[in-house]
Image 1 (cartoon, each protein chain N blue to C red):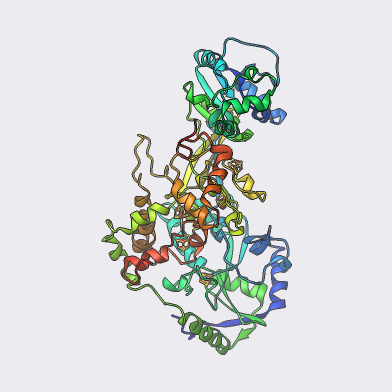
Image 2: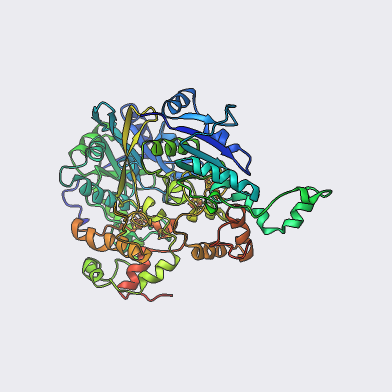
Length: 251
Length: 348
Ligand code: SF4
Ligand code: SF4
Ligand code: SF4
Ligand code: SF4
Ligand code: SF4
């Protein structure tokens, strides 16, 4: 079986997930390269390629002029994988959707606002068909390897559909709600190992919602733990600003 | 049930017990209640000094030692070589409480069914289980007294009773007898000490609400609750987060997955805790789900505890440890559900 050619592309993002993707031991990297050929990867190699089987796309789409490039990638690739929150759910980039475009342009280039081309920040799957997602801000390297491996083997990508609480409980962490901290873990997709609550923080929701979240109950619980309703939406906004179930009225 | 006739009791001082634990540490891994990251958990200790004196209900029950969160059960190679992995080491589980002992009975029976589960059973065989009786209810979320699981008959090898300055103990089987003689000595205790403990325990538990109304008939009662409004009511609040299942000492569902190594030459078969409260649990390969509605999942979970498994194991499969009540952010409690179903209480 010929090795599939894999190309990485980035749009609006910090490129941190690309770095995480190859944060492997030398041995793991060699194993990975035994299974796939990397033909385009700005963070690690300089070749450019027009022929690839799997496209791994990082970043949100924030300029209409990026759409043809994304569409070309989609057309060339057999499989398109979203890498990281920016590309899967827009994540932090969606914060700008809450502001007027002119305001943003004036803030970034006060002297020449029109030079800053920007539109609504969108997830990749709002523009083209997506075959698999690797969520997280940043991604979990081992999950990246697993998804790529499963796809190469023709299997389901197999990322968790259950929430962060499952991983938290398995690790026997004290739930941060007991300390009066409001955590989004019950409605957020696991796969990170509940790293934030484990390390003394709380889940911000970077991996996106689980497939069937009970948002009404989540809000009521946060409110029961003394968080006013308007602050609850702020907590959701950091990573879930593009979620239409939570923020219906945003452009 | 608690008659003392023909039950020999022995005693050991508290200091004697600490020395005994240090002695057994030379021959066994010892798991006991200990502090870890400001949390009280059952974990392996290196010396008796690490053991916590005060009992506080733990997030996970000691089932994790016999049925771990994740376990490799098989290794295979691309050439087709398959090796079963059955890991167990000689261990002592020290200080497990009556609710968890009764939960272990359910697990022991479940994993012994048909051919028996070698991974679970070998760990049990290699272990000595030292229980410790409770003299009073441990906190406000526990409800062992509603299902009589504060009472221990079998399920451990040795049972301790804390008398303040010393322990008295009895062994429950031959394994316990041999172990006790070797590590705790065989200084006899008169029945008076036990009777005193029992009297205090009965007086403390006598102040609780006692067993559920119609406790032994619950399987029959639950048969007629298919359309009870409570399932829909609870479902509105339930997050389907699965926390209740993770922490339950009698939940034994697992998922099995093959993980091929990245080199594609070898792989492992893993089993991991799964949870019937999760939306994907009842999905089948053809894409349907048996229990798509949250209300169905809650009903199923409660029927497992008080109907199906209660018939099978002749005891409620909920031991009232209260772990799920503490874990559930939506305040869903099996105790409350049973009380409403039996008509003992009304919704507040
Ligand atoms: S800390 Fe957060 S993720 Fe962990 S159990 Fe509590 S709510 Fe769930
Ligand atoms: S705990 Fe939440 S915020 Fe933290 S990495 Fe996991 S999903 Fe992201
Ligand atoms: S729930 Fe009952 S049996 Fe279990 S530890 Fe608490 S008091 Fe003891
Ligand atoms: S812990 Fe509570 S909210 Fe979570 S699945 Fe169980 S009953 Fe539902
Ligand atoms: S259902 Fe809840 S109270 Fe009953 S045994 Fe399980 S965790 Fe304990």
